[in-house]
Structures are given as structure tokens and as C-alpha cells.
Figure 1 (cartoon, rainbow, N blue to C red):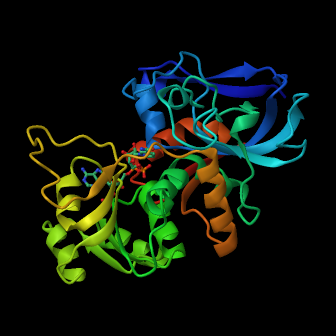
Figure 2 (cartoon, helix red, strand yellow):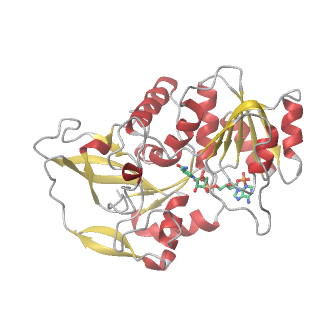
Length: 339
Ligand SMILES: NC(=O)c1ccc[n+]([C@@H]2O[C@H](COP(=O)([O-])OP(=O)(O)OC[C@H]3O[C@@H](n4cnc5c(N)ncnc54)[C@H](OP(=O)(O)O)[C@@H]3O)[C@@H](O)[C@H]2O)c1
């Protein structure tokens, strides 16, 4: 049977996603070839396909930055992986550790380097990461983007401290990982969502308090009340400008606010002096380095923590997976398996 890769014609959305025969690649000296077992979707994949992501998609590139598979060939100088290893990959092709430069941030799998929605992927050795062994392939295919950026927000530059309160906003995979990561560090988690069903599921995965933003539009006041008027020490806003003003209002003095979500503000609602005089730190982490990814994996391993999966689709129904991701309001990761 021929190997297959999905390819993207950018700006045509799901209609631009077509399959082509893939020749089994040969590794360069510092590369590994991976037989893909599973991959998963992220919001950025839709933005790339719509032509609205900061890095343009190379026409004909293979999409998806999250995946897992088995190394079937390696270059002569590769020492970080052996044939037969189960591996995943980083988001940025060569960002190993330290500060990210613009050049390092510009090279991304599933954008200008071929991604995981294929039978085979070529990874640079710098990108190779070994996922925690306790995870299934579908679970191990969910870590690269949402898992690592949530880790960056919760654990870098210093981890949240036990007993501190973390506010998570939204229930996409970033927010769900943030809940799990925050609980690993012993924090108290207050989560914001949009329905009683999602509130119940957030409690199941570890949230201590949940506020339904539809039932309680002034949710920032509810969060202040839950913190005795002090506000939270940490925010993971995984929505964006629609929720940032309330996230800032719910934050305490000197809080660390991670604005991870990239949803734009509703039309006509500009922001005026969003920071006030709280001397809080507002930042937008860019996923994370390989070192962040490996630190997260050690913690997942130690605590036996798993990602939240919504639904798994077979490879030949990848377009349905994109449709479900976009229209089905998933709770957890949408995964595609190759086997
Ligand atoms: N900086 C980075 O490195 C990085 C990495 C990954 C993702 N991101 C960004 O982070 C965001 C979250 O990504 P994701 O993959 O976790 O999930 P996602 O699928 O983009 O998140 C969707 C969730 O956000 C909430 N939401 C959506 N629109 C909203 C609105 N107008 N007001 C309030 N809540 C709203 C909803 O949760 P409820 O129904 O529970 O409210 C929804 O389920 C995206 O914008 C993504 O582009 C950034």
C-alpha cells in the first residue's frame, strides 16, 4: 500500500486539504524519519489553513504540529534517538532551550516544515522528544502545542507555588492542560467556562471552583469573592481579548497573567489601560522550548497525568476531524490515528 500525506493549499480551509502519495523519505545526517502513529489538531492549524497565522503556510506543506510515531531511519550523526524509539516533536524546529529568537520562532512543523498528518515525517534531531511512557499513542500525540504552552504558563520562569490560586479561562486544550499542570504543583484552580456540562467536566479533571460565564457574566467579581477580595496570583487566559479585561480584573497585585488565547476582541470593543496599577506581569508565551517540553514530560511521568481527549478519528477521515474540531465544540484534544 502506498504511503499517504495530506497537503494544504493555504487559504482554501478544509477544501484545500487533499491527499497525495508520499515517498518514504531518506534522513539527512542530523534527521530521523518517523512512521507516524497519531496526530492531533490545534487552533493554529485552522489559522494556518486560513492564511491568518503570523507564519505563512508553505503551499503543499503537510499540516499539524502535534504527533507521535516510531523512528524507522536515522542520519549518521544522530545520537538523541534510536531506530524503534517512540518519539514526538517540538513545535519549533530548532528551539532547544533559552530565549527564543525571531529566527527560531519562524521555523515550525505543519507550517513551513512538513508536519504530522502523513504516514511519515522527517524530524530534525533538535526536535526529537521522547514522550512519557504511560501515555497511549493518541495521548502522546497531544502534548507539543497545548501541553507545552500551558506548561510555560504554569511552570516558567518559576512554577506556581502550592496554595497559590490559578485562574484558567476557556476549556480548549490549553486551559485543560493548565488545570492539570497547576494541580501537579499543588495550586488551587478556579476555572471559567460557558456551560454546566463543561463545568462538571472541569471539576472531574481537577478544577476546585468553576464559574459559568454565561450564568455569571460578572465572573471576575465571582473570582475576587472566591479569593477573599485579593484576586488570583496566576492567570492562564486561553481565550484572548474577549476575556482579557475580566482576567485582569480578577488578577491580584503583582499577579502573573499569561495571555495565551489569540481570539480577537469583539468589534468595537477596544481596550483602555488594561493593566491599571497592579504591577502585574502580562506575557504571551510562545509555546515552549525542547527543554520546557522535556521538563513537562518528567512531571507528567512522575504524577501519571494524561491529556484530556475528546475524540479519535481514523487517518482517512482527517477532514471530518477538522470539521469536528471547528464546529463540534470539543472538550479535549481531537486526535487522528494512522494505524
Ligand atoms: N501562544 C501560544 O503559544 C499558543 C499555543 C496554543 C494555543 N494558543 C491559542 O490559545 C487559544 C486556545 O487554544 P486551545 O487550543 O486551547 O483551544 P480552542 O479550541 O481555541 O479554545 C476554545 C475555547 O475557548 C473558549 N472561548 C472561545 N471563544 C470565546 C469567547 N469569545 N469568550 C470566551 N471564551 C471563549 C471556549 O471555552 P468555554 O466554552 O469553556 O468558554 C472554547 O471551548 C487559541 O486562541 C490558540 O490560538 C496559543
